[in-house]
Length: 356
Image (tube, rainbow, N blue to C red):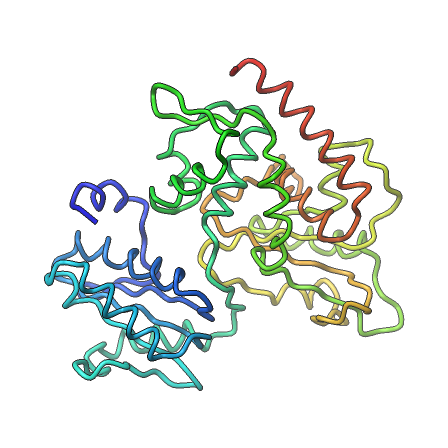
């Protein structure tokens, strides 16, 4: 990565934690080398602009062997200038303890402030989410802009909306192929609904969104409407109504009676979220992975910087229409999802006519 590239993306890159002497990036449940590389690029980009700081990549309970992580880190360092590579370290949290797999580094050099923060971040009461797939967030942001008729967008605006580097946006645009048109001013424009990429997204949507499901442990479950009423007094601006209720907000003619479950969309760009509010909605709700149990509440997580929630005065936020559409498919309401999708496509085509 050259100096020009680093300068270009530095303004959109933020570490999870910074002190006067250190920057820290935390990755959780690593299952792919690509996610490790993304974390290293994040740190290297910051270190290039912070010559007096050390960078620590903390891998929490990785699903890849530590030896493989170390090998990848060493290989990555060979591509960097020594002034950056010598300040880049890998720290592993496994089986309840911190360790540093390299032999040339003493963990105590992290200092008490940094060690306390890492332990608090790892062991705190908040729910930890897996690493975000920023490419998917770029795709959903582009699609949202087309459906809402907002016209061409610059690559820089996408970087800022999602909170990612230029190369992530470029890779996503490349993947969209002929569905994207590039203007002379280097802005991009979605020409039509990208059916192929949408189906690809849906195939992995549950994993990408890290969806959590809740069932009722009592004999008298509350209705989704009751849960929604209980949510309102909490005034959580980071939580939006999605699913059936959100889709009906945008499409009054949605062909469905009642609300089979409550779908909530939570804005969690930092990777952690406080789920204490669930017990306030209903103490009888408990997480489940049993496909045979009726789901009463589903939580989905938006990881980009901009939530794209729609907020009206005096109302709870509404999840964006693309999010609501994906949640209909996740709930296996295929007939309603197809109807809503057809409505959104017609709307996108009408609103984007002026940009063609």
